[in-house]
Image 1 (cartoon, helix red, strand yellow):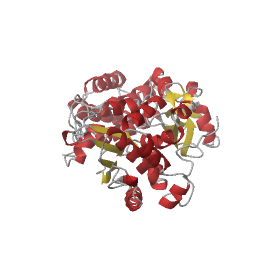
Image 2: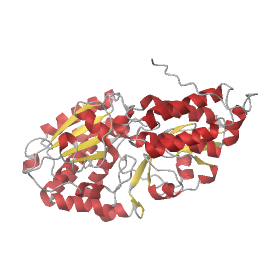
Image 3: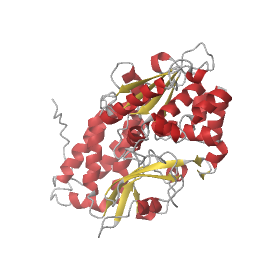
Length: 432
């Protein structure tokens, strides 16, 4: 299946970030169309009919998400763009922000109009210094051309967009933790329900969408829901930007219709490095079960990967070849989640740290045969009892690595002549 560039059609144009170039390439035509011919409810219905699902990982139907927002015009509403791209292996939002910022801005304006919002926020990863600069300049240009601000394009609709840099916390990618951060508090998740669509930013109804999701809205308005439905598969419509990193010839972003096979994505990325063979990959960022060689023909869409007990997530494919040590991979990933845990709940704060210490002991040649079932038990408790999705996503990469490559873990354990003995867990706090 060949690439189909919709969101990335003008990414390689050297001046696409400039508003005049964006307009010359058809930019802001969707905004003019929506404000002059569509009511907010009609725009919401078009997006719902298109079948667009959230591209931030959860895959919820975007139009349905918007429809949950109260329609009372007297109630202030907010739209928040989640650009806090911190999952290992993710970099698609950065590409869109840095090289085609007006596409995102137009998507934000359209989506804000649909839900009756007059103030929108773009919560951007703080380390994206270039992206933040590009976004702020683009917003200034949009205001000067009256695509933003008061009475946009001479209509009664007004909108202001505020760019807010994050502070480097992975947990801020969780939507309610992001809202706390926007309000000036520590980025820790909130209890749900109530959900943000009813009680969100400053206690008001709030829609939170990912960068890629909002960019899709532009093309749906321009070309229609039927056009969008014809791309991809039923219930998995449209294109997806697949990010490929790791031990592959040409790491990068590749845009395909949903339903492309994993093998076809690999082929577009040049295949494996010379003399290497494919071993495994995490298909949706690190927070999912890994895939192995038997999965190369799998359809890369939300439902097929869910049926495989994995996830499409953000379509961030982290590739490992036959030289990869899966024990070290599991240790490094759990180390990341340990470092990024907000510490609010015990299963995540303690569970991630326990698994890291067990794997460190294993790598040091002091593992025990009881360690593998212990890791499984800890991971199950983390997934079942944690407050937010962080620990739920931390468990699968380790569990699936053990399941698929158990002999590698056992080989480390067998280096210990006392592996049959049950070790005493020494709980250490290196930061104290």
